Image 1 (spheres, helix red, strand yellow):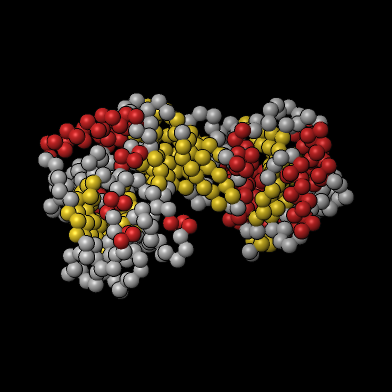
Image 2 (image 1 turned 90 degrees about the vertical axis):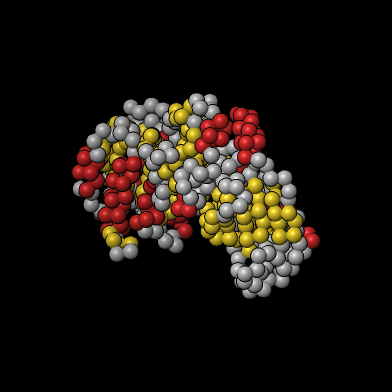
Length: 481
């Protein structure tokens, strides 16, 4: 057992003066993210001083320095082989056999930050070896309040259920959770860092009292696929006889019609959109001409009336698209939904290339619906998309079709303030986002399933950008300036 007590308790008045002076300098603080958590006051969010460290059993010298738990996370064990999460940049608590054992704990103090209840999680413990850790907090370093057991990198804790609103805490006590004997190199929890989101006064200084802006932007293939930057969207639906077949017990044409109507509901009012169908060689009809979307009733009526029958004239249909876009300037997007390849002898890839050769600035996104193992159909549809710089996606059921079509529709997103009040609603890819008072916000992006981002920071006179990307049907986000 190793006992290290750290003297130098600071008197309340002196500490408060130190804290206020430090917060005054936070105007130049930069936000920082570790393990997926964004701290608006940057590295200042992490514990600054070791008050006490008492190790329990079997802690090796390489993992017994409590100073390694100070400051931001810096574990480097990714290249370690067989070390079980041990890291020389973290400190081990050791293992204890029962709760009666007072060993195996670490007390850390925040000097230039404080811990208090705010929106979402408040305290983050970065544990490198996956062992659970008991967490207590204290305002004065004497009386401690148990706030839970956590694990992870980081393990997150909302102190709200345990504390009185407005109470500030400066000390965190971390203890080993007794279990079976642990004779690894770093028994018990291995602590790399402890961070607190910080008081609103600190954040107000760090982010400033003026306003900043927020943007939610698509990147990568998603940016290419969205209709948000297009001056015209044309939905082209396969209504050939094969669309009368079933998938998962549902008629494919019915599934497609339902999902198309969902897509229409996701488009912003006034978006230029049209609908074309094909259902037999040299049979392709413009159902709804491209026009500003002001009332979805027209779309609902026309889509509901569609019935399957006939062959699949993709090449002929793409040639007719020229007329659909004849009076539409700017970038255009064709969303082609089909369950098979060309069956009327045409060359749809050449037809797609012909659109570009005719001077049309457009992309074709192709959704292959229930094409199964038909590699020839897959290759042809993929080539149609690639010929125009568009995207090819596949769907084998209703939910996958919904996700595939959503790839071409700008998602809505909502911004909520710290009180849960909706302050803005917008669309992914808008040229400009909202101007907001500096502070914390909750952002909900209408993907499927929705993405929820807590504690998004809007800083004074800065633009916070949330980047949304889709890969293999999964949406990911990143936050930056």
